[in-house]
Length: 207
Image (cartoon, rainbow, N blue to C red; front, side, top):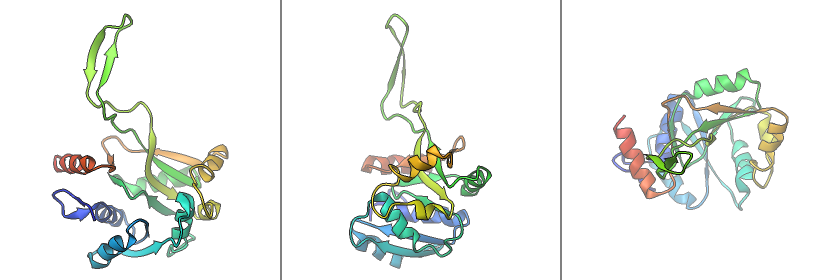
């Protein structure tokens, strides 16, 4: 398991602590590549909530895998959260759930505006460079990898395949897909590389 530098805990440990702090009592963890390593860590760790693990016998795709995991939810008649495994964030899930309920949405996506990893250049109308901006915020909102789903959402997931190409577009056409912009100042980072781990540890240490 890859640990967050200086914490001794992998990303999933921080995610589970965050979920528990937000009132979540049960989590279903979908284990993929090297599932036995993740299961071993979960079995040995002192966790703040109840955890059930599921392992696909064959690849089902993101949507199929989500549906397979959702079958193990302790109360399928209640709304439920989901999060990508490579996201490190902190914000109020309770407020996101309230946003979801107010809009009577079937699914709600958290939306982030990450910083561009390169420096940006500004020019005037004549082409003169006027300024350099280091890692500016993206002009676009992106899927932040955290979700609230209504009970009816599970049956809409494909048995195999990608729900972001099937279920989400359908819900968007029907105006049943909501987007929750992360509150100003909320911490969010996708952990894709070793550098991301180091940078995230530095950022959180400075908060």
